[in-house]
Image (cartoon, rainbow over all chains, first blue to last red; front, side, top):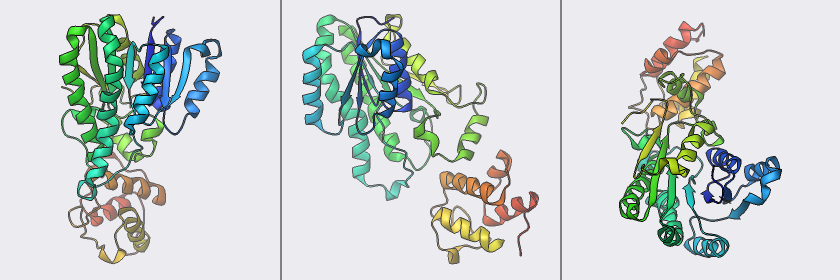
Length: 249
Length: 79
């Protein structure tokens, strides 16, 4: 269980983020659920968790604006330190040929994925160092292992940057009792992937060894929950693939 | 029916219908990459009420191949 733990979740309105939030609340954690534009799934979760709604704080946060991150984190930290930080923001899917992609598209993805994780970590890590414990978990993608698909170069580049910063933080923060890890799912059945061609999903399923099915948000949330707990203390700098065997190291 | 097929391909791949011919391939049409190819399969299945197997999808290397597989599924093209 996660009593007395305060967990910050970015991208909490998304399919995976919302499932994680639900699991965390069910495990008695206090959660700060960050969203940018849409919050309907977070509101539904609050309605669903009436008895524990005092454990849920909702926070609007624009991860592309450094000042907004600074102001928001200062406000949050006045009330409580953060024990676990889970980072899973993403832009809507947009297929684009690499040569038609502007550098600005790459930069926005790098900023959203990696820079915002770094900026938030700068606020929360000092207290984690004092407590000699803390966990930082990000959601990457199984496409950072092996050959990436075409048409999503900006997304892949953002995720590779996140993978790099995750590993560097794991190396430098491990001595303070802070774990930094990531999980990398293959295609997950969420609103984010709903627009993908159904034939792509059908063909992917046929190649997934485990039950010939796509991942569901709970498949990912369960692994993240494990990474939130003390049971996973010796896992550090790891990028855990959650792909039913579709991708292997 | 061939006209209908070419109109559909033109729309999905965002290419002028006049540029399309039976011999057109992913190499000759810039937007025909693997992702758009699968979007095309979705549209073909929906428009012609057919269901292609994974093997058939992998076997498509030109518009002529699409026509061949549509014919296998009983779609009558007018040429």
